[in-house]
Image (cartoon, rainbow, N blue to C red; front, side, top):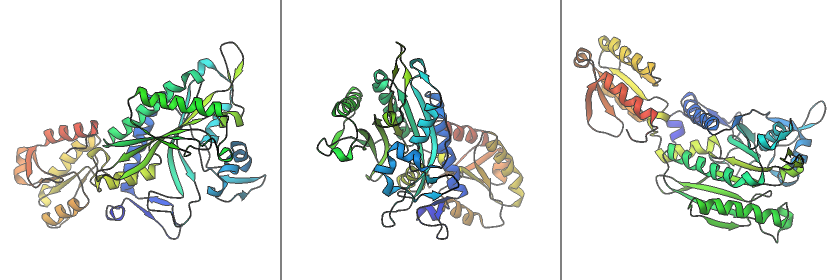
Amino acid sequence: MLGKQLDLFSIQELAGPGLIFWHPKGGIIRKEMEDWMRSEYLKRGYSLVYTPHVARRQLFFTSGHEGYYSQNMFDAMELDDAEYRLKPMNCPGHILVYKDSLKSYRDLPVRLGELGTVYRYERSGVMHGLLRVRGFTQDDAHIFCTPEQIEGEIASCLEFALDVLKDFGFDKFQTELSTWNPNDRKNFVGSEEQWIHATQSLEKVLKQRNIEYKTIPGEAAFYGPKIDIKLVDAIGRLWQLSTVQFDFNLPQRFGLEYVAEDGTRKQPVMVHRALYGSVERFFGVLIEHYAGAFPVWLSPVQAVMIPISERHADYANKVAAQLRAIGVRVEVDARNEKMNAKIREHAMQKVPFLLVVGDKEAEAGKVNVRTRGNEKTEDMPAAEFVEKIKKLIAEKSSAL
């Protein structure tokens, strides 16, 4: 299993199933994923929020999760003043942030984003590695806007979702539009008029963007229709990750308002969107897609300096210092081991670049570069390699 071979994560029997322990190398990749997402949030006009992991059960009665979702929630805990639940979703918390002050139409849209950890009671038979777990972190955002703004916001969410796929090296995907079943009223909230309006808004955006999609009747969330983007990995498998969901239920349940241009109070429309789906699941798909050979920008160790003998360690450290100065994750392997054994070990760890240095390289200010997946080595000036790796990282290139 690649997660174990590359020392990325584990599931610990003592702690329980479906709970992920991120090891240092996996932690670095997670940090890169989270940094990318938070940076994009800020570029795209989202505000960052943080909400608690537990809340009074009353919050989930108000949101409807106690009625529609309780079978997927952890049991309630008795605390001093009330029963509390671990949160299964971030949306009720974001609603409370929105509701904390009265908004004007000039403030909308309000886009709140959080890498928020949630907990869901998955049955033991369905849990599977990183792909189906009980505790996971969603790149969760909720957008509160006027009905007139909804199509523009959905279009922006779709554009954002496609940028996620592009930057992480996925070029194939399938899109589904999940709609309600009007004959199954007990499993869907809202009026027929709301469902028609919401579904038409999503359809219009997909058509405007020329995105091919398949309609899946009866598969909507209980609170509104949704667009799901399923990516296709390197060997043709389909993975459900990004989702953009319309919600006319929660604004109503929580009595959300904004002051309209004419001074009256109106109810905003809400969009839920998670583009990684969850950090854990997206990471699991990345491992599978790249078979552990991550692009340079995501690799936990991006380069290893291998001095041929002890006397070359100073030069190896000097080149490593130049790489660290531009933010490269580099190690110097100066162990008293055979060079070929060290090369083999780091190749098994799928490190993108192994830089071997001896007398010849030290004298000429060069490095002998072994690129992952390439049989031939290449001599180049150390300064040239520094520029090459800097460019690969900046461009988030999947190529080496």
